[in-house]
Amino acid sequence: MAYKLSKWSLAALYPGYESAELQSAFDMIEEQVTSFEGLRNKLTPDMPTDQFVDVLRASEETARVASKLYSFAGLSFTADTQDQKAQALQARVMQFLAEIENRTLFFSLWWKELDDANAKRLMEASGDYRYYLEAMRLYKPHTLSEAEEKIVNIKNVTGSNALINLYDSITNRYAFKMKVNGKEKEMTAAELFSFRYSSDPKVRAESYQAQFKVLANDGPILGQMYQTRLRDWHNENVSLRKFGSSIAARNLSNDIPDEAVDALLGVARKNVGIFQRYFKMKARYVGMRKLRRYDIYAPVARSKKTYSFDEAVHMVLDAFNGFEPSVAGLAKRVFDESRIDSEIRKGKAGGAFCWSVLPEMTPWVLVNYQGTGREVATLAHELGHAIHSMLAAHHGTFTFQSSLPLAETASTFAEMVLIDKLLTEEKDESVRRDILFKQMDDAYATIMRQSYFALFEKQAHEMVQKNASADDLAAAYLENLKEQFGDSLELSDEFKWEWVGIPHIYHTPFYVYAYAFGQLLVLALYQQFKAEGESFKPKYLKILSAGGSEAPEKILSEAGINIRDAKFWQGGFDVLEKLVGELEKLPVGVKAKPKPAKKAVKKKAVMRATKNVKAKTVKKKK
Image 1 (cartoon, rainbow, N blue to C red):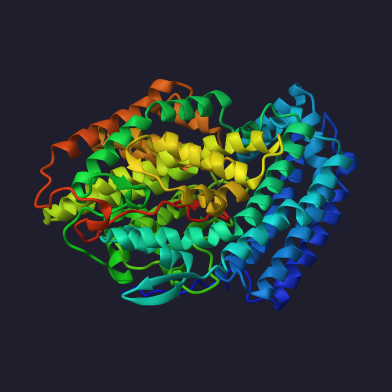
Image 2 (image 1 turned 90 degrees about the vertical axis):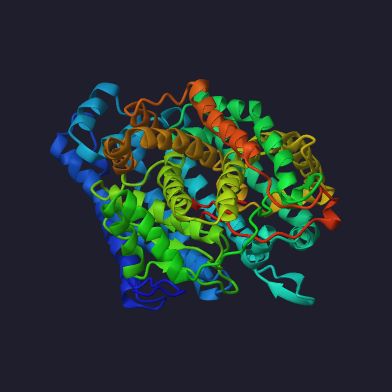
């Protein structure tokens, strides 16, 4: 079968904006919720378990229709953020669902207030709903009155959520201008970012400069949007809900102990020298005395390879098949059912993501494919997310999706499976070397870069409460970069505006540490796989098939992993330090004597994986 660049089909959700099926979904939810409201007075501490399970099933039925409705609106919007019909539908859906949530809010409030003995009795009889109910009760100390919760829900529709949609609409309409082959070309962010992996130092620099020219121009406005987002987050989560810190609210939604997150970020900060050492070493391979920040993803291969989309799909499916045929079969469903949007077009959201709707539905995947090795790896990454979701399809709507930190497990592991296959089959030593360098580039982008994003977020949330300006935040971000890189490279001041172009910190505060969590976890798991072989696979697939049916800490503890222990996280960095040592032993090969960046020897590109994420609105993270 030949695979071609294409746009996804949303027909499995609804035929179109004006379809009777779409309108029927609104009506169906209205009817279901009216019926559900009638259960309010039947919720008692001693209610029979069978009646309680019936209440849960009724709630899930509404959630299923709501998920389809929300997903159709969201996927339509990301396919074309400039489509006014998509914008209008998304606004309508979010308003409608907020009102529905308010009408059904009484159930979650009753459940959180229920005494422990009866809660335990009902949970034990709830089957797959158990962890969903358990996780809900974790929010008891942070839950407001019913009237207050309703106000928060309605406020978010025209407040924080609307602000995020506005940010997306503004940043996804940007047209960047850069000279290509002597002619100025207007391009999307995805097209612009591809030049960051050029073998030409001048082209790499111009790619960043073209982006920062636009971001700096809008920096004060985008910065003001960020300040407002952070104030809203603090007002709700710290002032009203009484979380101990801004990041604590995210930790609870991930069901990850604060202690584990602190250990992760602390160990990351402690090991920043590994990457500084790597960048100093990499400079030799690209013919430079010292890297600039523009050059950290510079290729080291002496030959350039590109892959058609058909080649890329077959490479990924073959790699998955070599690991486990059933896994490849799940990934193939994404293509067979037209659930992938792979082409580049104006207005389409940048980056990549996987969007799961219902347990039995094949997820939708978005990529912006341009033919390089890094896009092949991105494809493997997003298909890994889809596989994760499909392996957990035996769970219900409330429990099939994993928490954010575990969500990166399958995707990152999928990339490593692909890389292993490439290293095994590739005969060109320069390409093999580039693959090894790519692994360290990825490790920086996924672990250290994301950890420092999280550290910046912690600082920014505190600064905004002290009335910091956008310029103050930009200065803090530049200092954050200086700590990351030390004296390992040259850093220009224009990078101070990079943060306003990072969608995650707007969309989902503190999402980013999930990347570092996932990558370090996978480094540990992959070492087990290499040591144990076939016996490892059932354990790994069990982790994925758990979905969100258990607390992440419990899922991982059954695999012998203690996420609270700094030694566990250090183990991942030890693997990376070993890899740097191996790269330092490789012969540099034919290269010119080190020269300043402006006279650097041009080398050709091959691979660098762009990491992204599952989640409903996940964008490009680099």
